[in-house]
Amino acid sequence: MKTIINTKYVKIFLLLILSLVSFTGIAQEEEEKKKFTFSGTVDAYYRANFNALNKFVPDETGDIIAGPQAPGTSFANRPGFALGMVNLIANYEGEKVGFVADLVFGPRGEEAVFGSPIGSANIVNQLYVYWNVSESTTLTFGNFNTFLGYEVISPAANFNYSTSYMFSYGPFSHAGLKADFDLGNDWSAMLAVLNPTDFTDINPFGNLSFGAQLGYSGQFLNILYGKQDFGEQFDGTELVDTDAEALFQIDYTGGFDLTEKFYLGINATYQDTDGAGFYGAALYPQLAASENFSIGLRAEYFKELEDGGPVYGADVESLAFTLTGSATIGDLVIKPELRLDSISEEVFLDGDLDPTDNLASFVLAAVYSF
Image (cartoon, rainbow, N blue to C red; front, side):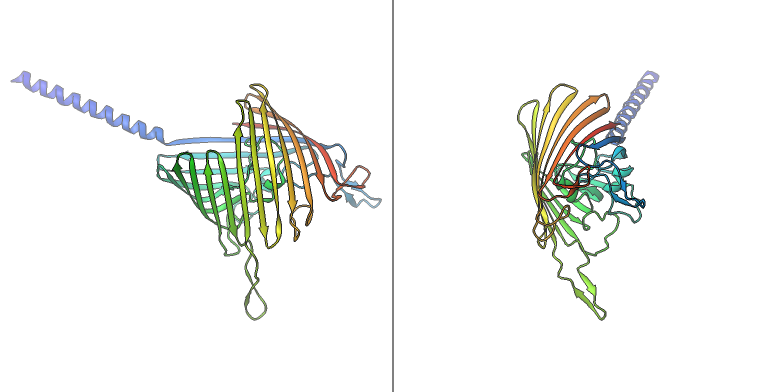
């Protein structure tokens, strides 16, 4: 009888151990599904013109009459040795929910979040939470970088260090709610309700914008629509409609691996607000010359609309060629870059302060990723 009792105790004890091991395994598996990562970049650059000013020029009284010339695009426009930004990204990924907190410090970051001066102190690039409702549907709520265009704010995610005209004058970021759908067979879709463009911590106008995306195998068609102003004003006695038109932008972004070492990126866009805006297209051929060195070209055509343009003026055409090398040394990437901007109007000043329609420049950038 005693032997039987001991055998039962042994069986019970073994069952408890097995249960504990199983529970611990499940708990560890659940913990493994919850991942916290911390990453980011640091970048700096040197910039010089070949045929234009690289300094400020005063007159006899000391007043500045001319300054360094640069293309009318974002970020890499300061003369001499200059700073990009520090980008710090905290990412928590759970099985169903998670968040991204993306902070930027420095000139590039301040320019990127120019529309968010209230509450964010110009350091919040992205701040959003998400919920994986199902295997095919994800909801994202908060401030996230734009879904339009080939280029992005992060210098590590772009092949070229300087940016295109289309990127510089399209949206940078949005605040709102978006739903991403995996439709299967390489198809995807996205729908979004948003603040006006780049107002990521406040909606001063009371109007909402709407975004949509349809994707197939790495090719994306993007649409953005919505009023970007107050829509009405007070005339002294009552509120009246300003008859302001909504912004409409349609954008195609994609690319193809033509060979194992040769990639061709493509971007085309059209933006219009009551006759003012722009359209353009760019090709991004990139060749991996070796394991640690690649070379790429951005060839961009940019045309400002007849009723108004955001860069050099209405009905102005721009043609820009940017040749960039990318040398990888561990986590550091060195990018030497030659750029030629040719404009249909004389928008630059040469070294003698005479108007000219072209600008040749050089940039040497260093981007460290961690």
